[in-house]
Length: 109
Image 1 (cartoon, rainbow, N blue to C red):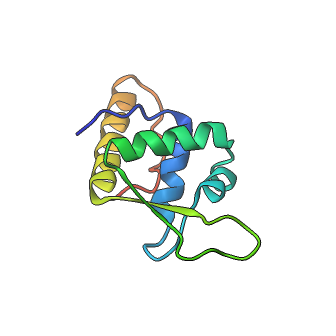
Image 2 (tube, rainbow, N blue to C red):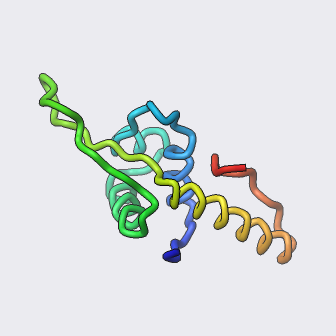
């Protein structure tokens, strides 16, 4: 499984994706708003997640009136497993170093 650095911005993006219901469409600007990050941060993170196989993306059907089509994103099974493993490893490292362990970022239990 490819290595991904779990920076705070990456965790914020993953949190938005992980918290979304399976039938809840999540697009880039929504992620920007919910993660409180700019598009110059979010879109490169989405590209890295897709390259690692953690993210599937697809275009909205049809052409909505008055706005461009949205590109929707969702975590793959590999992404959910990878997120869970990465968060568990991160928590172990933080405990070993004596840091407080942050709550889970929506990954699998």
